[in-house]
Image (cartoon, rainbow, N blue to C red; front, top):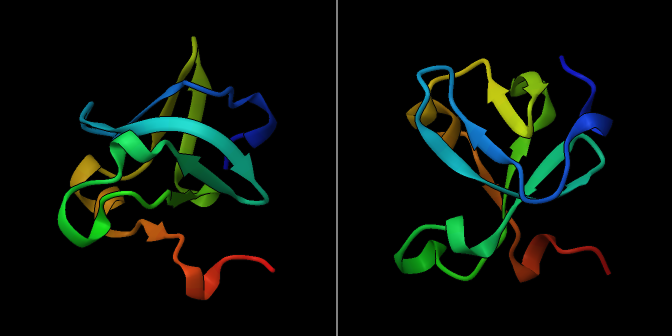
Length: 87
């Protein structure tokens, strides 16, 4: 796993296949919080989504590269809802 402290806000997150996965809003613990604009459509719209830090292969030149392809990383995203938000 790469050093998550190297990840900066607004960095692009791309899959191992070069596909855009999202844009970093911040790092919370061992997860990358993506901006809401990259949150998808329908019931996923308007929620922050998170990528597990264990998927980060490297951080270089303002880009977060994942060890999984983009479609796999998106399928593994978790989202923040009222149910799992910290109190």
